[in-house]
Image 1 (tube, rainbow, N blue to C red):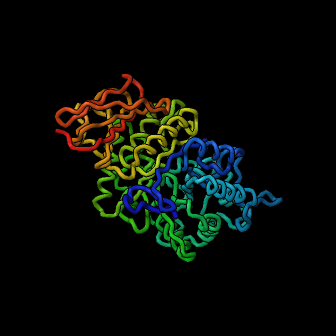
Image 2: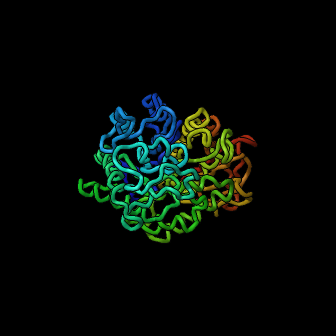
Image 3: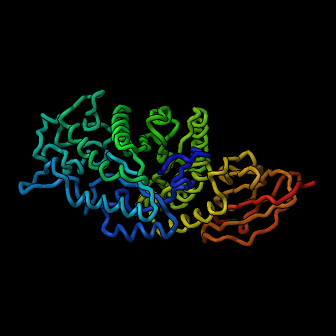
Amino acid sequence: MLKPYGKNPFYWERHGRPLLLVGGSVEDNLFQIPDLEEHLRLLADTGGNYIRCTMSSRDPGDVWPFERGESGLYDLNQPSREYWSRFERCVELCKELGIVVQIEIWDRFDFAREPWQANPFNPANNRNYSGAEARLDTEYAAHPSERQNPFFRTVPKLENNAVLLNYQRVFVDRILKRTLPHDHVLYCMDNETNESPEWGRYWAEYIKAEAKNLGRGVFCTEMWDAHDINHSMHEATWRHPDLYGFCDISQNNHQSGENHYKNLIRFRTRLAMTNRPRPLNNVKIYGADSGRYGNDRDGTERFWRNVFAGCASVRFHRPPTGIGLSDLARTHIRAMRSFVGRFPVQQSRVANERLSQREPNEAFCLIRPGQGSAVYLPSGGHVQLAVPPRDSYRVHWLDIARAEWRDPGKAVLEKGLIDLSTPDPGGSWVAVVEEGGGTGR
């Protein structure tokens, strides 16, 4: 099954083998797109093995999870054949292709503003309850961060809205019916929530209890709204390892440059100090020329910095705020797969202290004790790498923009330091420095 890697629980393993989750796709609710199989095969052929799956229906062409009667009203007791067929097909195709699915049960953007006007849970759109019975209004005009909709406060420790909670459980049960038999699914409770932790806790406990009834183990997380992953909001995840078996830290991908990396290291260090390390997932990496959260370069740098900060997954966010599975994204996915094929990151540790003559955001280091080191240079340049004494070292340069390795060269070792200068002054590069045999003089 998919679970934290026994030898280094900051990463995942499946079928007894460690794996780095890498992905990018055109949509977040990927099961709703018409060319699903083609898109998933393109991802797999590129070297990707990871998708995001919001259970969302607010985009053109999407269907909602309930059947609609001749009256135009939905029946929340009747599952939509089309919606659940699409979802089942996505889960099965991902199993076939070796792709891990990270589900987000609730997407708050479906429950406010225009999407709420079409949502079957809106009392104006179903035959099952009135607004008074469900304690819901037919309009919520503010951004969902304003928390106008009490949909996310139905659980017993909050507003104890039994009428609405019953239908929410029915929806979640339909998800679990189609996913719990599989071992390639991760569960995230929400997309960018700022609701009470009791909401997510209820659903994580519910999912884990249902899985236990089937004799299965599952791994859950919550995705918080705060862009600073060291904000107190995120404590509700990392302080509760028995409930949340991994941490999704996607919101850190609003940060850039050195700050993006330092936030990751600080968070990872805090997690290590709990003596319950867990995988750190990035199910969405922002940054695209078409978006609001940085450009293409920001997105690709975040992708690589996450790996060099010891994260377990990286996935480019969908357009327009991410580069999705564009040609650029595919190049970086191929390059990443090539890199981890040569340098198993699950056997490494973060080691920027090995670098000198380093400017902010110039270089990032991982080491595999007794094996070698890897250094990522986002914009070319020169740094020095401290290494143990050996007879010889070889340097393999990965040209990220071409996803190609340069011919290896012998490294010059002087006073315990290797000078690393990228083959070209610009571009993005990874140097893999392999240790030779023997002991140097």
